[in-house]
Length: 168
View (cartoon, rainbow, N blue to C red):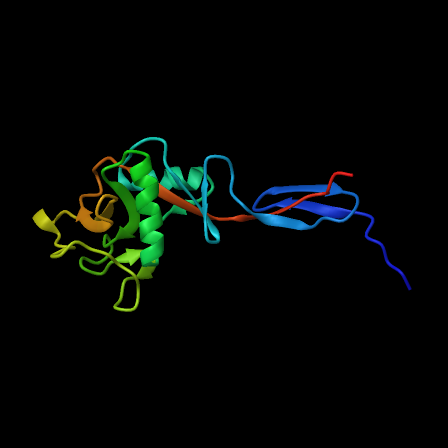
């Protein structure tokens, strides 16, 4: 018995869907325009500086979420991305707003087993008002600061599996 694929679904995750005829091989992981690919994710800085809360929303509006590095290599990558955009500081998705001293990055509590890269003596909650994390891309170190400061944010989204109908 012989089967032939006569149509396929062209998918660009997370939202685009179209029908096509013929085989549809996966060509690569890809990122939307203006996003930078690294490992299985796409990264981008917000266009403008905002408070921490506004930056969380800005990343969501761009189809992602604010980034929090999960490894030394990822921290190096996002630092180089911020440096290439001329940024001295950028927001990271880490805060201790719920319970002072209990830091969470994208909902995951920082423990001795999770990646973090604070400056020595940080986080220190100086002035009892430092509940959000910023990254200094020149040093790759993190610092806690008031969530009301204005910085651009690092956003992340999963890379997309791009499928297409080959041209004949």
